[in-house]
Amino acid sequence: MSVRVRFAPSPTGFVHIGSLRTALYNYLFAKKMGGTYLLRVEDTDRTRLVDGAIENMLSAMDWAGVNHTEGVVLDEFGKVTQKGEYGPYIQSERLDIYKKYIQKLLDEDKAYYCFCTKDRLDKLRETQKENGENPKYDGHCKSLSKEEIQKRIENGEEYVIRLKLPQNHTIKFNDLVRGETEFNTNDLDDQVLIKADGFPTYHFAVVVDDYLMKITHVIRGEEWVSSTPKHVYLYEAFGWEAPTFVHLPNILNTEKKKLSKRQGDVAVEDFKKKGYLPQGLVNYVSLVGWSPEENKELFTMTELEEAFSIERVSKSGGVFDTEKLNWVNQHYIKEADDNYLTDLAIPFLVEEGFIKEDEINSKYEFIKGMVSVLKEKLQYVKEITNHANIFFGNEVKLEDSDCEEFLKLDHMNTLINSLCEKVEKSEKVDEEFVKAMFKEIQKEHGIKGKSLFMGSRVILTGQMHGPDLPKTMEVLGKDICLNRIKFVKNNLM
Ligand code: GLU
Image (cartoon, rainbow, N blue to C red; front, side, top):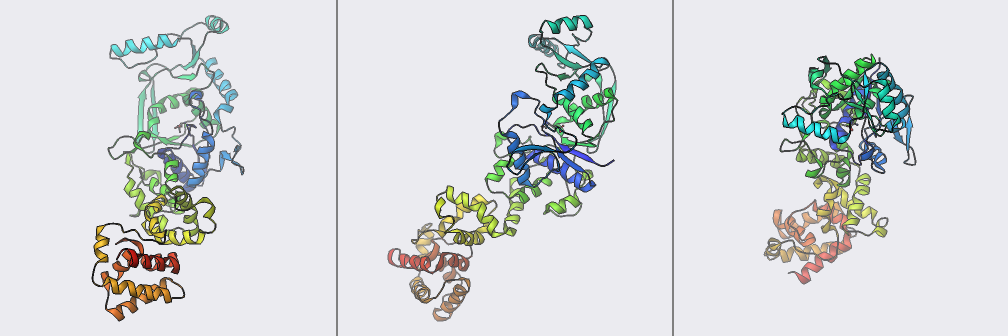
């Protein structure tokens, strides 16, 4: 039987980094096993629906390059559509299917109608808590007669349908990460399967869908472990074979608590907005909870597809370490194509007012030059705005008093005059010219090392440290370099 796995997000408006990892591991497992990875939308909680959430989620997955070949997809116009032979893949479009399967359970006395009001259930829970018991449905409606049920439905009473769990029944399942797990039904609740609004609960829909979509492995976050026995019992009740379960460890923050939205960036979109590269984010996230066999941390998607294995997924939570993410991302930025990075950098430069929207075309080559000089410094693309100021303006603003002191050094007059003369006479200021010029100055005036290089940097950029100076000067071009040298000479010395 060929492997079929699924990522089954609820459209809540954003993709948590933990969901990205769940999707990624499903994708990688399918690739490794030559199987199918599909995406199903679980939208049965009608109170949590958010407009445009499916589109956002799909485009985030698309951006990350975790691509599914079946299920809910975006068409070429960005509209939600579906492909595959096991659809529909959006749960709210499968109500007829759930109706058919719940009827089967009702007919076989494996599920029952429950008319308990919210008020009764609240009181029940209160009392159980006061008595130190685990809150649990007490089976009040478990034995209603057919006639009574009929009458109450006809009277328009609101109802839900619950799973009828047998007493003292052992439920076992094997989890590929956590091993053999056993539960007793006495510790479980008669789970609601169909809600008062007629929609199935997650627990019911997930089982029916995983079965009908021929899912072989359910790979999901560990927050679902406690629900799995209920699911396994449902498989039993239907007489279906359950899939293999894989529960992934939580992603933790540095305080070893579950990574949550309140602590800042946790959504794929947050990272995208800062200019993290999808390759960097995916590579890093793959390592949170999985350890590769070889001692290596940088993996392209193709390498991950080969290296990934469920056996090396850890049981305990993995810590999300932003510094490590930045290190991985920086690697991909250094390797990235300059045009690609330039396109990513432009919106940040526009937002911070370095360039105007209508200058993008005319300044494209200049921005690209700047990006190629600065890329070695960037952990994520947005950081370009922290370094960009030295590329703008004909005047020089000294960064601090150390720069002021540097300008007062004995050799600086000779240096600035020499720079001025040589740049003025040059045909073109490019990297090669600048390097040759520094050699000449050293030979002619004996100025070398820090005095020469830091001195020139202070004159041209107003800073003692910064990116490669010959390259920076090439991007600035002859006119700006000369204007700056003259400005410093006339105003700051
Ligand atoms: N809809 C559930 C979620 O959003 C899916 C859980 C599962 O994979 O079974 O996490």
